[in-house]
Amino acid sequence: MSWQMAAVAGIGAITASQQKAYGKFNQQVQNRNAEVKEQEVEILDNKLTLDLANFDKKFRELEGSTIVQTAKSGVTQGGTASRIRLANLTQAEIEKNQMKYDTEIGKAKAFETANFSRIQGQIAKREGDIAAMKTLTSTGTSLLTMQG
Image (cartoon, rainbow, N blue to C red; front, side, top):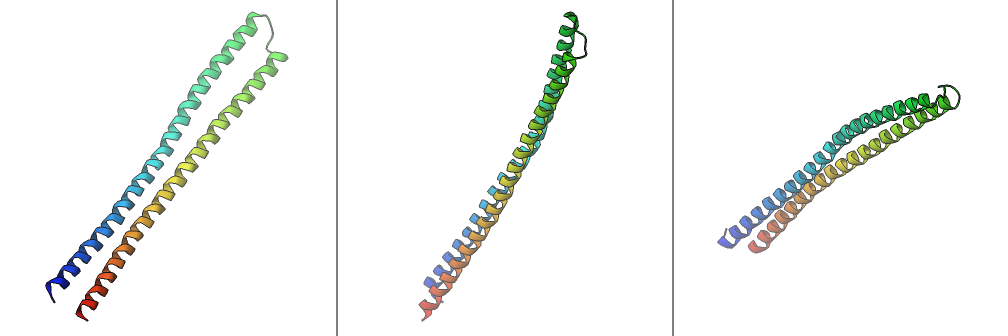
């Protein structure tokens, strides 16, 4: 084997190795992106818990204030006051359910993005493997034609 053939073989092997490493690196980047999105799900859960607690606190304060104002005005807790209180409770439940729904949608999007990032990482890895295989095949072909 001549020194030219050895050089071609060496360059081909190094190039193929770098292509595989590049694919693996891109896969690691995409996996990290997926982890970040999965952490976002936990953040959304924590935010929901905090938002619901704050909402409940403010609602209780409003409810207490309304009861005091109603009592001060001499109105009894039956009739209209009772209907208003029931309407407020119903609206509060609707708003809490909306917060929960929005959080679930955000979590679903984050999981979907995480899954997509992992898929992109697998594709990047395969592309690196294919590029390395093409390089090795091309190098082999070059060596065969050099002997020719």
